[in-house]
Length: 126
Length: 126
DNA sequence: TTAATATATGAACAATTATTCATATGTTCA
DNA sequence: TGAACATATGAATAATTGTTCATATATTAA
Image (tube, rainbow over all chains, first blue to last red; front, side):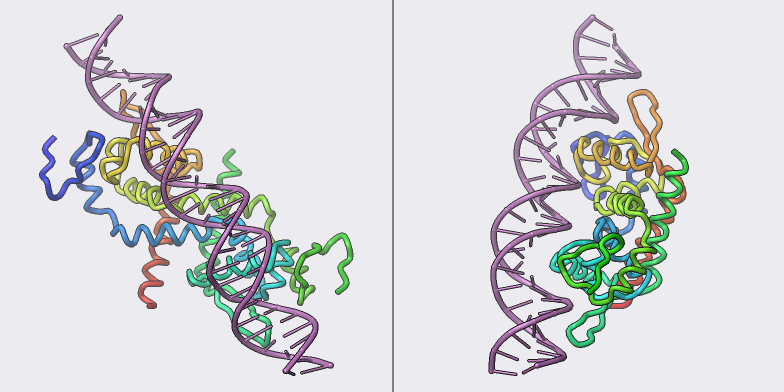
């Protein structure tokens, strides 16, 4: 097991296929990109947020209407909208006291749909 | 605020636009589906798992090689592979002591790609 | 200006999840 | 059979994340 010090990670466990590990390592996207991708998916990985996004797929809504729809507190919804907004999944516009949220773009819809398609596909297979 | 007891949720906060809430409520996919979708995305919402999936995009790998590649413990990887497998994102085959993991299907690749595209798109916009 | 209302937010708490540690299982080879 | 090795797994711990609670900000209307 020749681990030349600079390009191969030292690892607790033995690498069985050093060649494979090296090749894959070379092709793997930047750590930074993969982290961002994980964080991006994480935003979709919450029931409350998925529900909010699904609702906004239908029409823009204000905070208290979303709270009403999901039977959750205004505060909880507001916190989650913040997460969605800071990840560029929703945008908002203010009209007096009322803040209306809507989906940022069609891309969000595409991803949501893909998730739902996968579920349906999986459920059919069982 | 006329909340007829049976088709409108009682909610802490006032609904400003009852009509919108009702319409959206009608169109919203089943709670069950949305939960499953959230759980599905949750699986992608972890750096370690995203890295494993990205690696497997390149070629099938055994557990210890993945551990080596990610510089993580064999146990941590094994636990995460279990999560991926129980969500039908990877499959495995056994060859003697060694267990090789690979992506379950092309669908996984499509979703991963979509995440990366979104990141790139977002980063370009900033 | 004051009261009422819609939303936002910090901090505490509750819940969930990832990793570690110790060890079990199953396979190969001597 | 026993030693070595690859992987799996239960339980404990560490880390992260969602919700609540109290309260702040901002707007409207009286």
